[in-house]
Image (tube, rainbow, N blue to C red; front, side):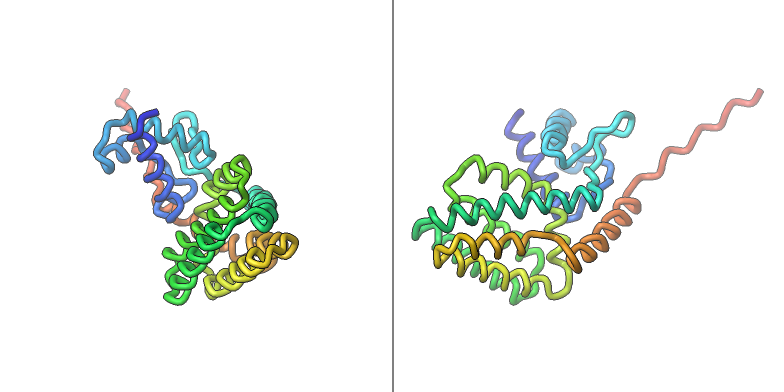
Length: 235
């Protein structure tokens, strides 16, 4: 795969994460090539990369479509995400050094700034930096890679969660609990705090379902109408 294909993959993935391309949206190669000013070949390669990550489905006679995840599957993915991050936090509590703790604290301040501004999009990226800092501090590259991979697949849905009223302030409080535990080197407390932070249950599950319904409606509005059938020749 070329560097251009990788750049296009990142750009399309970002549009999925931001909701510009909702789950179920058809990804037309010609339209994407025109929009990005490239040929269809790197677009096709980028879509193939995204399909390998599970973010795009390649369907017969329909082409590429932004992957749709059922609510049950989504909850299962968040359960695994919570356990991966719990493992990262447990290791980070034992292994992180002063520089890594400083990086985590800086990421936390980035979250504070965007939360105070009620900037859910800005908080989304600051939140990613916070979690990535914990992955790095685990000093386990395989675990970090797995956490990154699942985190990428969940990006559109994690972003949805942050748009729920008062979620930014609550998320920041949860980050504070994780940071305090890691600063104290308390692995059990860090695990409990981050697992609770990531898990989707109760009211958060209902909020996520509501967000999914909005995404589905958005995808249906964006779906192009099928071409009209040509009139049959008269007998």
